[in-house]
Length: 383
Image (cartoon, rainbow, N blue to C red; front, side, top):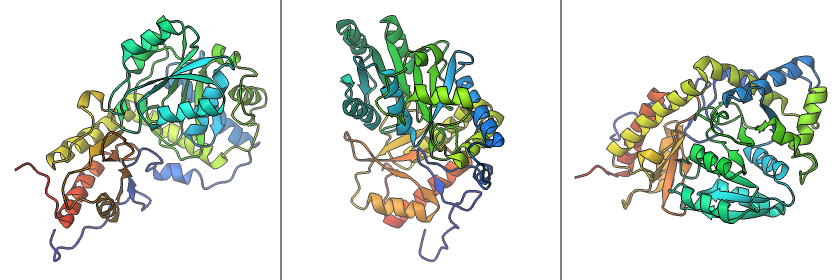
């Protein structure tokens, strides 16, 4: 693009906002935003009904009807993960934490603060857990009661082999706790074939709600065993569930507008075809993005076999004119917001494929990348 050429109007969502190519919070539909316009009381019958309907839908996403129950937790997704870990882990329990990114590390920190014993199996951020080593640890360490795993680790975008992990955990007679924050609603997770005690997620990821509500989908029998285990009052999933079952009310003030928006987001999720529909759109987004960025000379951190269609990590180009902040600012000026990298193994940046985005939005983002590279005088194409 030369100085004489006018810049295209920046891309915008249907409500006029820049498009968030991030792993959440993310671009939401106008109808989800509009659901928050009205005020409801926390004890209002209309709100109680909407909340109940939303919670009843969540176990269906993992084919857990009747066997699983969804327990909401006010706050970000990490609130839900901490609630899961500190409610389900016995005081004398030991958790094997599978780490290949920041969110596995965060789980270990949660357990340390809660004074729950933990053993860590860590691999590099671009490497899935060593399944043989996981089984070896479980065989050699009978004290381990639970295994914690991240389904899609947002640090890199890696898809961890959750089905294989679950099979090992079940074979060794242990319990599985899953952080599916960046996967729930887009990547298949079937409780009938992938046994787990609990899975934590949040409204503002693949279900395309807004931030402020996490939830844990729990196996009923396992949740019933957790009475008295929690290390905090507010994050006690057993107590939260008991109150909701008994009265339909939250123990403490719920994020009403967030929950009403979440109800609308779940309506749209169902209309799109559930996990196959939502995950299919994201997979299409990722395909367009990866092929287009590689054609421009960028390199992905992960091979295709390990890449989840949620967020893609690209290595920072080794070009003297490439400065990430200029690149970020150039894309933002064109209406696209991306994410900086979070890796220790490589300099990188990340581009998300989720939210109210489609393949045409990704093509627009690629055009913005081309324009920004030209503006920076960066040519990465092979010679």
